[in-house]
Image 1: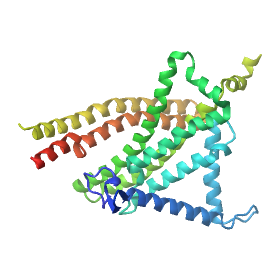
Image 2: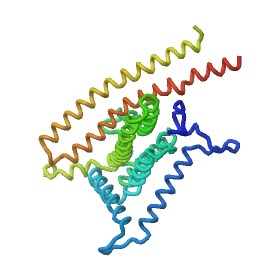
Image 3: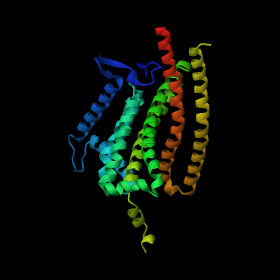
Image 4: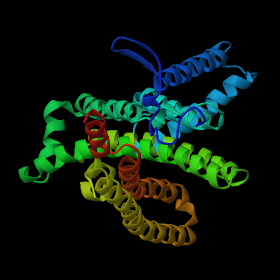
Length: 239
Length: 93
């Protein structure tokens, strides 16, 4: 927050290096930083992984995180979570880490840039039909667009785009607005309130990471679940 | 008034109006949602996990409306395209 001026609403506007048309912006640098951090910690955690009774602290932490994500996915999709664990878990870990590190001075969360959140939302936008097609086949997936009648086709297509836009703007707006609010408060009440707001920012960052991955999972689940399966779950309807 | 002044006045007033009106609806509906969720948890404490998850997701959905308004207000104040356009014209002319 210190390296950005108040009227720069995105870290994209902070260009560190430039050759011709190729620019290195602060967003890219911090994204690489988070990727390196995640890679390093996962290497550290899985270095001496074991199935015995005595496990390392890192493995314990990793097991807690992975099993929590698996439980959440299983609750929503009512399905084997291993199919979705890699995608949803990556989304969650990346967004959560990039939001939480915002308490470090000099760091700007890459999620406070519209380009990063748009990239993440486009990943969801592409992945949802992929999972739907692999699970139900091309025709079965496309048939969902014409439910209940063919009149609803444009609304389904519009819904795909608007929910991608909503994912983008929600994450960007929350994180960016929080940085700006802290910046404004620093000018008005310099000592106490910015600290309280930073603590609130940690909560908001975690909640936004949770919501982004949960919404991605809900979209995937709605694309993969078949109507036959829904009726099959209800034993009364089979009789 | 020249065009720059008009743009500045309209931008500032509409940024304030956007935030005021845009925060009104989400505030009311979030309060209503939280009230319903709390009473639902009080009636069925066993279903707390499901209710909390649905509550968070719905809160985020409603909150995003206020966030859209905030983004519009920020663009109007800090990254106004019309303002930049007329500043460029004034500098060139």
